[in-house]
Image (tube, rainbow, N blue to C red):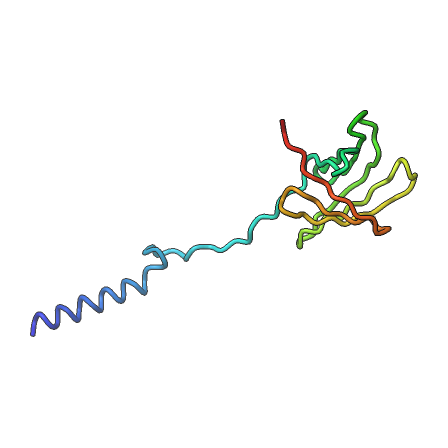
Length: 128
């Protein structure tokens, strides 16, 4: 009878221990689930046509001719919580304000659409 009580007592203690300890056996909270980090657009991007290099840096957007460095556009950008990149800029060539919406594809491509419907793609420029 003593052995039976010992087994019941040991089982009760084991069950209580499982209920007191959190996941992983500790007494703290369980593992925290975090949302995956969105890729950053900060850095240099080049158009698939190779004509211009666009720079996104801390909310500032510029693009310049790849061949000469001549400034083509200057403006700003914001990244929405859903990953949409909204770009507002002044086009030197067209002498007007322009807007574009871009989505990050595969982390190294930006698929963009200008406010007039024209679509273009930028590819992250590799650091050499």
